[in-house]
Figure 1 (cartoon, rainbow, N blue to C red):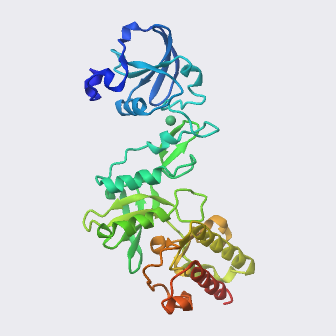
Figure 2 (cartoon, rainbow, N blue to C red; figure 1 turned 120 degrees about the vertical axis):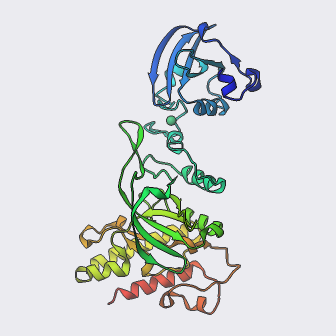
Length: 371
Ligand SMILES: [Zn+2]
């Protein structure tokens, strides 16, 4: 039965005894979550029965070595078919306290209101491409708050109202409505639900299926943390016709700095200018702190989330086009690109592009504020 389905030939293969369910007495419900129900019972002595409604989650738990509680064996409820892990009885008192109510795993967050494991596994990772799946997992493992974005593979047919909003040498950007929308963790229900009809930007990278490293590099440069001064990323997709990969990012309603200024120039006083410059340098500082160089820093790459100047705050401005971002020490290949007035003189003389060259570009942005 259970063992055949789980591809385990002998219980001894995994060093565990198969305990017939009828050996348990005085079964008493301790609690229930989305994936597990926990009971106390007597066997040869007191034990905890952790019942899983999902065989994959059960198997992961069996494989996962958590030495805090002794595992006596495995069992299966003949009526409900649940897979059961038979643990040391002390598990019952920790369940719901230091162990997650929903998945039964150990909470790794101190206030025990959310479980990293539950968020990382909130939806299956299934892009059909092993390398992409690895990238999705890598992005998921960055989760360190229940407010973080759960990065995912988004099928292209999830997007409606696709409209071109910008075109550059390397990419075309579209706005679109993501039908089902991103996952959001609900603290009260302790589970993720979707926020439908989310407006997003689709950054389609030309020829990305042949430039997978550059594509991965750009994806990693975006943030899943909503409080970062870097544009948020929701996931990746693929255009089924061109096969080009797509980065699904936050939609910047105010457009680029140039566009935003053309709307707000009348009320753009010194106070606002200084506020804006502070936000820009904060964003650049974040990039430099990660030992990166932006390489293409100009007003076209500074995006505003809101159109309206009155809504301006530290969170309303982002630095984009991180595709050219490189590690500080990666100066092997000298490339010159960018928007001429913002390029530092030494770069034009084919010297390596350093963080100082980004600062030169920032200086040019300050200079623009005089107008
Ligand atoms: Zn959990």
